[in-house]
Length: 513
Image (cartoon, rainbow, N blue to C red; front, side, top):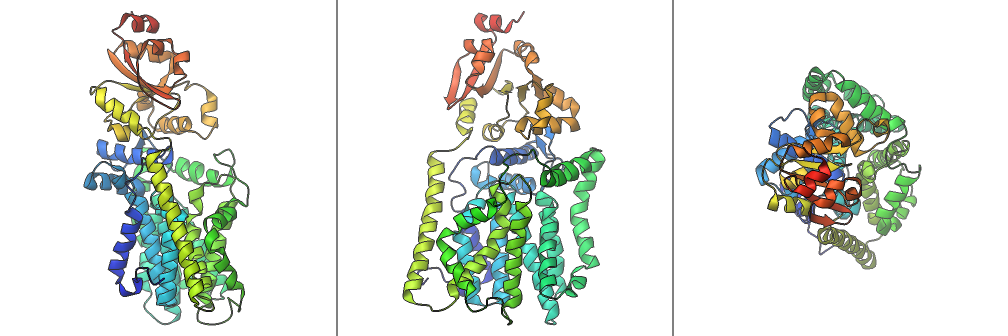
């Protein structure tokens, strides 16, 4: 630990900048990954290019799977810092920094400087938290908001119990909870409320709940959250039903969504990502960890926090890795406490430093690997388009929507997505075509232009001299005209064709008059 940066000698502002720099240090190094990074950054890019900062759109269609805070931050970052991956990942970097600093300041206030410093260092090198802080989707932003809300509510409760000022922290908690709701929906409010409720109940401090149910706080929350939801409901009458019932409650309670996993999935994930530190966790079983004392409320909070989040996200069938991010901060605290239990022998410090160094090498190596060998990125296709395409030439995507292409190619208008949109199975599967079909229900006029049935594709191509088609390389077997068009770029099983309808062979294959 002696070689580590002495965080205890830094002020809160300097520590925040150091943490921010750590999470941002490699955010530029790799291409956006499909589907999540391409999808959410693509929506932010459309918000920026259209100038409509109120309605999120996906390929020009209203997209209400998630609320707008991520898009606002990302679009603002692209405008401020430029059009590149570093700016596109501003939201997760800020979310990771918010969560880390909120935890650090809270532990420093209610425990001690050494525990706070050790907890922060564990969190900074935790692979799940570090990589989540550089992955451009909504999980880390809402995890940071949930973490900050929990510690602000707990700080307000403990301050009130000790006769210290507490209303300022409580007002901040309601404001950050509103940011959490605007990040990803109801979990931004429900999860902190659940954790604090169980904690106060088990701690037999239930009377403090009455102080936390503070009407000025509810006014702050509604003032921040309400305007966007009201505006969207006024524009789109089915918005509230789709956003809350379909995308919030149904995704939690119903089956049929992507990535079903067993109940034990998240405990296994946390065990794997914390594997080098699990021996330190075993030390907490010694000496009555929850014995009466000044540290009992803090330790009980961390245990309740970890268990509640893991249990909550283990209930639904659909499980994605980023969902469990709000459980990482309390786990980091428990690891730090385990390390600090007992003696401070040099051998223990060397083993701890070795574990941290191995984890840092792992995450940096993984980022470097993804930078050299990008996974499911359309950046090279966008480069090929930008090198040869003339503005105004239409682009059609076969079967699927390649989310990151509009961002990398800086497209100013939606593309045509070719599929059998009359097939009822499209709306039955949790997939990208279903997302577009759902979005099209909010704007049928635009949907008629950008959601192209296979039977209408040839007629559209015949009306333009040059068009671009992107899709599976096997698409040439389905569409005869692609066999007459040159492949401009090919990677893995995806090809980009330049369709020149002025050549006789192509016009004949299309059946143009």
